[in-house]
Length: 370
Image (tube, rainbow, N blue to C red; front, side, top):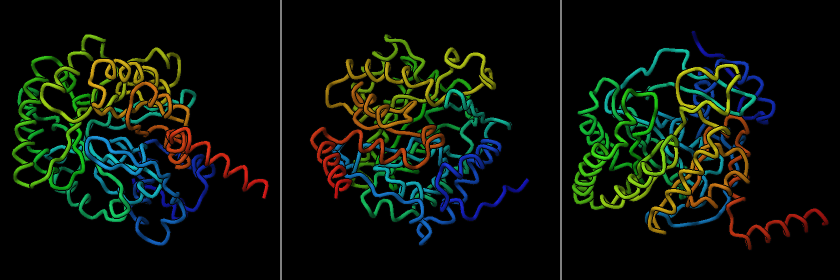
């Protein structure tokens, strides 16, 4: 069934657009938003939702980020809207997860809102158009990177690939995205691809990271540039598992870690409509679980080791809590759906150094008195 058309969506304040979008099936609303952004990005209409990027430059994993707030992977799986999303004020955008071959993902319906909890459950299953289309989309993006934005490319394995051959898919995907990525994220933590999280185990993770490190070194020589690799992990890990992953990351020279993906836990949403749907839960209920993993990683890893914190950020205070837990950078996804584009500069301002925040507050107060 064709999606409804909303030509003026970007011109609407999000508070007015949200009831319309929340009246649609969640995946239909998601696709409509992406179609609108893709159609209008890099046109004069983009100024209607564009926000001034908060300047908070920081170098992480050798990359110069214009600020610490990024978009998490999963929202733009095919990399169609890098410029449109980037115009919201992000310092970095992560797109994907992409798999070597196109795949439709899991049967629909596969995305559910839990509005009372400001949460989503999805079991999309790495639905994407495949590596070739993904790379073409990334190459077409221009304004976000031209303005200094950082683009991360998130890779996974095809559902049809046996878990014992998973490394083959990751190596293919790494080689495909490497020339076009500022950094690459290895996604082994989605709960929606059968057995994928088994790759977080001791021997499997050791073998996978060894193979990826060797291939990355070959690609670095071939293209004469080092592209950092991050590993994305789940929130449903105990302390021993987190410590093991931390040690394995350091041993294989991986550049950073993204903590965390969605959770399988449902305690925080028991009794709510859709709470028992299968898939990964994101949004406010994963906030504390993510922070727990970040704190444990920060304690287990060398101090400069980069951590990207993600999970349940719906305010500037939430972003700051991620930073205080030990994250160097912070990503949002579900918060953007519930709060809209204004969340991006709010979160970025919250992470400004104390002196810079005080100066901005004073400037705002002075303008108010003038």
